[in-house]
Image (cartoon, rainbow, N blue to C red; front, side, top):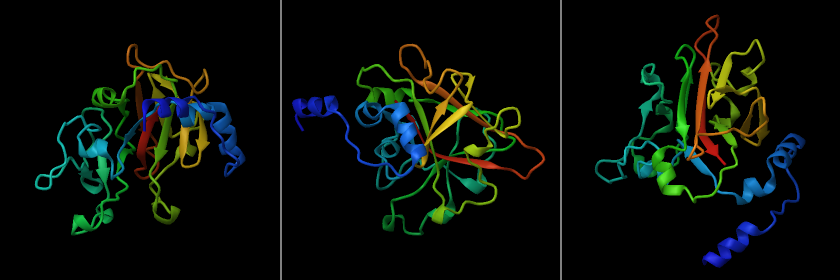
Length: 234
């Protein structure tokens, strides 16, 4: 496409006739259709296939996909030890892999948070993502988190969702730029994070990146876990 065509598209008004649920439509209207459908966004995703994974942009390794050496795959979920650097670990489920990897490249990898691991997080977008995808436009200050979709929508008993965020008695805690997430707004399989000032967050000066952190705490129960597929910044 030419630059003129792209500019015309970005300036056009998004058109949508229906939305699956009233909750989703309410979120769409609060966020703004033009923000969701026309503004630039950077997606920090664990999913495959994704060029950011193959090129080492998401992991900041800089290691590109190679037929012989492969790329940074993350760690097998069952073998991950509690991270000592506070960074969200990239994980995969061994049941999602075939013996011959050439037969399947679509994998629902994820960032893993487990009870007892403390706060784990990531600055999103990272410096490699900013260099690759930043367009120099002002960010909207919106953060959307998408959880892993379980096969047939049946998740293991230890998996948790955003329903555990409850004031004064919650088990799941999320902070953005050091401030607590107190509300969430659902949009299909993803959720926009909200705080005391609504859905917008200040971000880091100069880059507009956000420090997003997660913690599960409930020692009375068996180890709970949160599986995050993507964190999207608008």
